[in-house]
Image 1 (cartoon, helix red, strand yellow):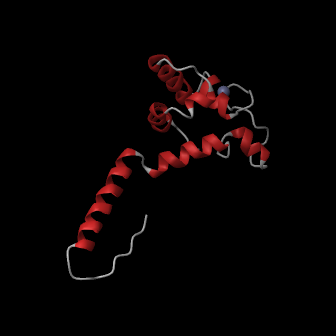
Image 2: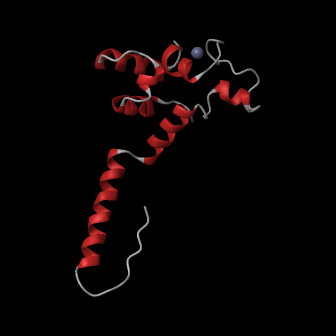
Amino acid sequence: MTLVFRRRTGHKYSYLLTYYRSIQRIEFFINPRHKDVVLTRLRLGKCCINAYLHQIGKHPNGLCNSCNKPETITHFLLECPHNETCSAVLAGCNSLGLSPTIDIVLSDSRQYNIITSTLSRKI
Ligand SMILES: [Zn+2]
């Protein structure tokens, strides 16, 4: 968010500037931009997952490097036994009482930190 304030005398604009700066800080601590970017990419399916990379000609076969199955978003987050993020997401589902489906995982705000903190590669 970019705000432009005209220089004027008086308290109105300085008060607004302080107010908006405090909101920006709060938004940053609650939801940093890189987490939003990662989650949006996962939701759209347009990310550095091998199945998508294969679709755009950037990966030879689209398979998971560990278990040789198609590496889709679902495989990456919920099915791959060799992926640290997958293990953490499934453990999070168990502890939070969530069904381990891709729609629920990508829509539950409590899973955001689990996903973004355990990623071991660029998404
Ligand atoms: Zn795998």
